[in-house]
Length: 196
Image 1 (cartoon, rainbow, N blue to C red):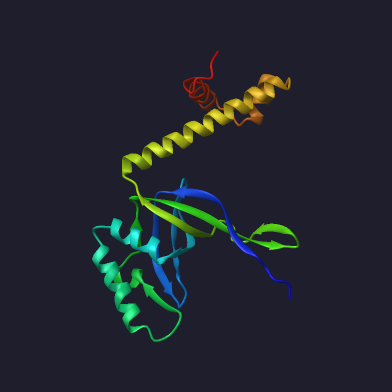
Image 2 (tube, helix red, strand yellow):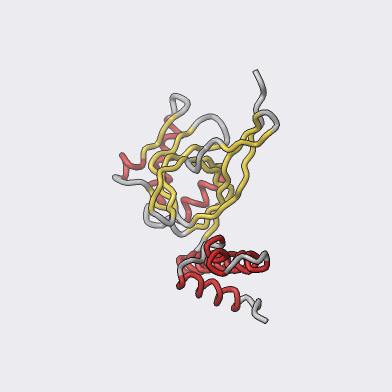
């Protein structure tokens, strides 16, 4: 049998997750079944994290912090089998929402025949770190990411023009066919000090 090597890569950020169940075992890590907030809504997702990150997450949810802590402590004290599950949806009536944190997520990959292969299909993430983030900070980060993406699209458009693509083709290749998006990309690019 060939030995597989596992690592995490492609770190991304998220500003909200929901945890429905936590699976405890005898390792230093926890598995959480829940949901990831995406641009299109909530998507079912699994998370793996450490107890330190979980502590940071629990401290950030003031309204249910005590109930969540008690559920974990009670399960750890009475744990008779490994693995053990804490079902927040059954105990609290809904998944626990963590929405005032910035999550640093990484996707797991493994080596198969000298090539790194992703195997989780965006349905499993390792939570490397969670740090406090106000709604205003989260909003500003989203706007900054959007502005950065628009600048990149406009730079791509300019690159296609340099390669002597005609304007409609350059806009299509840079995903700027929509006039409003094209205008926003231009102004984002100009705001970044790129206009001559």
